[in-house]
Amino acid sequence: MDTRDLTPELYTLTKNPKIFKGSYWGGGRRHFIPHQIIENRDKFVTDYGICRHVGKIPEYINKIAGINEGYSRKAFDHIEVYFNNSSQYVVIVSPYWVSDESFQLLTSKGFTVYEPLYTTDATTFIRVINKGAKVYKK
Image 1 (cartoon, rainbow, N blue to C red):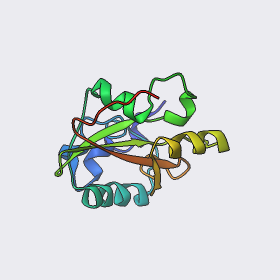
Image 2: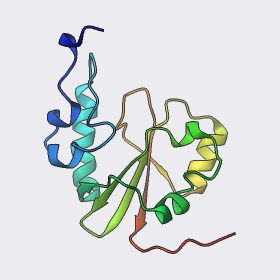
Image 3: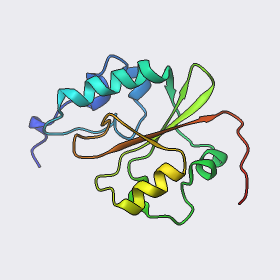
C-alpha cells in the first residue's frame, strides 16, 4: 500500500490531539477521513467534558458496560473509553453493522446513539458510567 496518500495520524487533525493520541481511532491513518468525523470528535469532547483517554479499561467498566460477556463481538466493535471532568467514564462503541439484536443489546446496557465518531458508515453508541460504580449480578 502506498502510504504517501494517507492522512497523518487522525488525532493530529482534531482540536484535542492530547485526548485522542492514545485512542484506537486516533492512531489510525486513512486515505480519506470526512471532516464531519473530526468535527464530531471535537463536539464529543465538549458535550461530555472529556479530559483524557483511558488506555487500560478497568475490569468493572467492562462488566458494567457488558463488554466481554460473550455477546456478539460485532456490537462492541471499535471500543474506546474516556474520562470526563465529572469523574465519569465515557464508553463508546462504533459497530459497522447494527442488527436489531445488537441495537437491543446495546440499549439494554444503557448505550445511546450519538453522532458518528469512527467513520460515517459506523453507528456510534455512548454510555456514561460513574467512577466506582458497583457491578450488580442479575
